Length: 230
Image 1 (tube, rainbow, N blue to C red):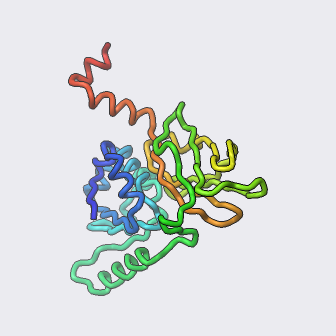
Image 2 (image 1 turned 60 degrees about the vertical axis):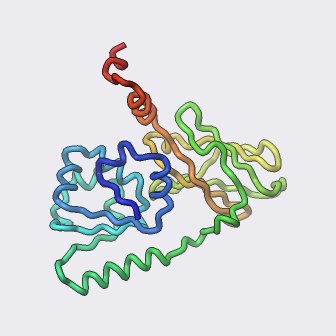
Image 3 (image 1 turned 120 degrees about the horizontal axis):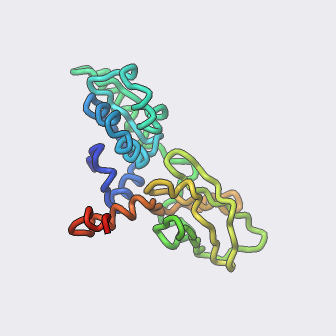
């Protein structure tokens, strides 16, 4: 179990991003303090939301109702409309039963194209990309034939983006560039490969924005302000 506050996504580590991306259940507690922060610092709320997978999210409304959430706050929580929501009621066994039942349904659910890790037929290199360095290689365990049809899908949050610039470098290697849309903010995406209509599994890739690069540079400086003024 990992606990993340709304302030965390601005400095979240790569290992934590991967843990979030691989988590099977994501619970968001929506309370007055969270809504206040979403209004005053919507960029933090958006950064948090971009780490979540909507179909795995259960939102607990604690001390607030859906009608309390303003348009600004809904926009900050980018995928809010897709979350399953439960209003928390004190000492209400029916609420507890409904919430736990929904949580177990999410945990039991297996995507139709899910493939066990030991059945994944490819690797992705490199595991991190950014603007200006967005080229990726898919390295197959077995060679491709000329008649094989290949499809690459990049899952970003709840959006599936099909890659159109696929090149075959040799029977074992495919080359493509990460879609620009995935490089606008720092986020972990899933790269899925479909061969002759059959899912071959997925690999995680980190997309790093220019702002993330600047953040890392400034954190490494003893005097960030002086560095910026040079």
